[in-house]
Length: 398
Image 1 (cartoon, rainbow, N blue to C red):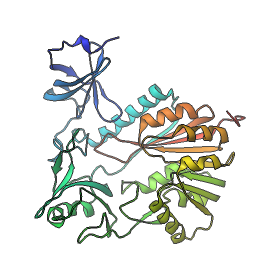
Image 2: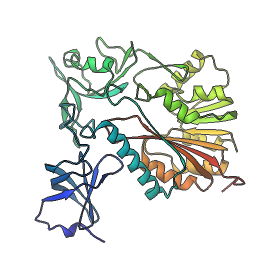
Image 3: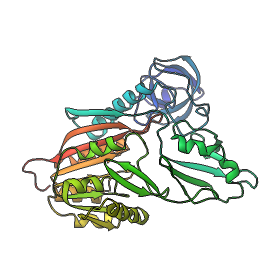
Image 4: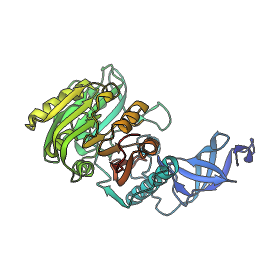
């Protein structure tokens, strides 16, 4: 097998050509069979790069010079792209980004998870700019003026910004005034969340409250503030709900990692009884408010960690919806799902490798019926995937 010893130790700069984009958004090249990963590269790029990390079976490099750009490469629209670590793919045409991310996700699912891709697949994309409803800003406090922006790529150094074109206008408008507004504030991070006419900040700061905001999606109203998780793409909330729910209905459904009830509320219109489990107490408080706000009577909200509750999962419920953190499911949750065998399982993931690992195990009991790839994170290497699984006939236990 090729290894980094094929490149002499005294050689730091080499010329390579990028083959493809891999999961996460980096480009992949090969030198004498050795994989070399290069951020902010494009398929077809011929590059001079400097090696920044050598491992026995791969290397990482940074671009020194673009010798010949690949098709689809462009000048990044944002002037902060070169230094800011918030975006990965602005150097690629918008539609090509989605195409390459989906291709990389499919490859990861088959290679890491041994997943046989189903016939039923779809790709959903929305606006590639001015879409993001929430952001986490880094702050360097100052008495007369604070520095506000994002971390530089690969470091904790602050890149000050006064604009960010991926944010919805209601958020982007805040950036110019924040350095003065945060002067004298002793905070190092600020979370912002905006709806059409409301803004929430966490922690609350002068002139910017921690008040609740309202969103409408899938025919439901949601109240929340900047402390809790909510889906980030303003234009794809309805599409995400529909991709998860599809047309199924039944007697019982369980929503795990349920947050403020984003999927819980729509499930309650399709199923006679819904149990929602969430460990974040602030999110559960908002979920209770949202259940009342939408006049739903058939939801049982459980305020505890999924790992603590999962032993109480009933056998053969009609539907389980999962939207776990990026790390995916813990072994305890996977084992219980296999043991209890819900009739249908819907897995929502923003981390393809974690999804591939979990599907590899879950497919012992469940058949993968469909995949929806949603580009909820344009200009970045991330992709949301909805996997629809159904219990295999006659497979009641593992």
